[in-house]
Image (cartoon, rainbow, N blue to C red; front, side, top):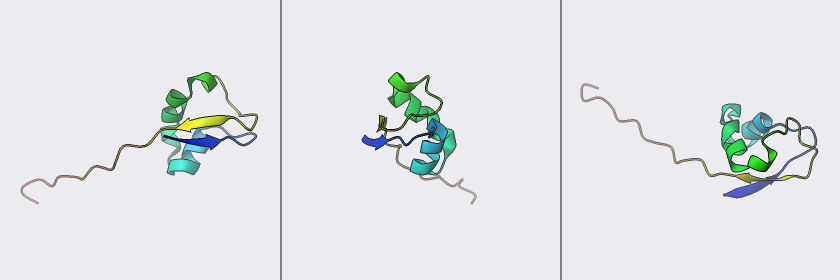
Amino acid sequence: MTSYIAQTGETFDAIARNLWNDERLFQRLVDANPQYRTVVFFAGGETLNVPDLPAATTTIKAPWE
């Protein structure tokens, strides 16, 4: 797990997009930072825990492919 310092006006989804190129992963940030779960816009300077994403999985091809 790493950390990230929020900037003024940032939101969880914007941070997820900046970190992982996918704003849909914002819930991972919320879960790792329950003390900020009610924050919509960060004031700036908050240190957030950034969880590691699971390793990418390999797609297994069907036998007929």
